[in-house]
Length: 604
Image 1 (cartoon, helix red, strand yellow):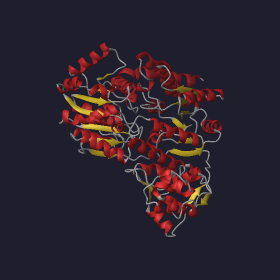
Image 2 (tube, rainbow, N blue to C red):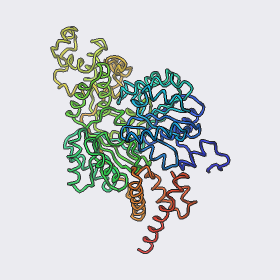
Image 3 (tube, helix red, strand yellow):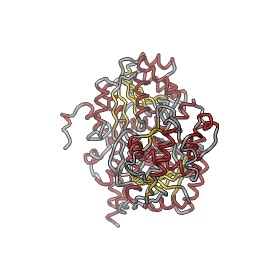
Image 4 (cartoon, rainbow, N blue to C red):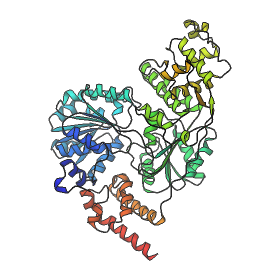
């Protein structure tokens, strides 16, 4: 039951009146309460869980000016557009705007007219901007995509480092740092750099149980891609590719097979990208073939599948990208294809990165964790959640749970690996351990005297890739641990010690076998027709206002509208995601479309 308006707290009143929601989602109320009490906040929430409201609601309750640090111009512009449509005075100062527009935005902020001002970190941290902001009534600072702060994060941005000065420049202003992807090491680094340790950390569960996880070795990748897209014919999906060229070629291939596929990558013109994105957001059954340039800030609820046609960069990147599927809570699928060429490409990207040796080591270890996930002999979701510090039972909704591969007894091979690690002092990475097993006379082997070990050459009958796969599966199964904080050396976990003592066995997947997931149930023709009409109206309104379609209303709001089919403004006001400003601006035109559709259906 909804609380009467008279008994609502200020934050719940704003949640309803401005944003159109009756209740906070899990974690949002706690985050809002922390910031309203004046304390700093570091929050890690799954993609699609509503992180923005965690600082937008406190910004409106606290009054004054809130500074929002955002890494992408497109993302900040979309958030500003969405806030303005909700009746909130929001602005951004960015490189995509003219000087006159930026000056006008600053004057509104200086006059106290602006509630939220979005800035890129490099613009915020200039001495001139900081001095000017210190003269204003700044009451809250929010740092979006906060993993960019950490040098251990998967998307480190050097210009974010300067944000560490904010706590000294604005000592009485609470700071919120928000991200969807941060492992324990990254969270600790953010807490130390941005907050000096003085922060409350809120980490929500990472699990998205409605997404079925599948990983397949890349064989005939076009056929494998068609299998997945074909299972979801008529539904929206995303296919991620590693390069712009492959993105274009894959979109052409799918279009040639009869699918409505569109490309999206940073090499396209802004107009072409926006046109394709609007079609994806508005029309059913569009397959967006994209590089990682696509996705940040996208709020489309009915994406039924995400395919990685190439290996992603890390488990963090994989988690963030699959999180764009199934935001409506309905069944969705994430299917990753990976091959040796992908691994070589990813290794070369890391080596070519303009970064220090320690960062390269960490990125190689991140990739090792991803490969262990790919080679997993057991539940994939357990491994994914374990990476982010959570434990779970087998999920029953991944390929290894639903259609377990035939497992091979690899206890003898495992004992050879464990012997090589123990005899060499539990200090070396997988490459050196494999050289010991295969009897390779490298300079490092000779210098360390490891050619004299009893296990030297004992595994010469197996090729290097086989040993690599076995070591990844030993790591994934908990027999081995990787020294993440050090140099990536392999150590023997308690489970491995037990195997050495003769307790237990090691079973591994000799090959990957996947199960075809069932396609999502199709929407009824009548409901689909109304939803399509609402999306067409949304796109027209978006074009008139020159904003992305989803900032008018989210897919979730349109779906709720189609289900409830409101006929009056009072009924329209209870649609999920309709606040006071959108009720005023859009009720009449959307209600007219609903009535017209109903009349047409009756006449038919």
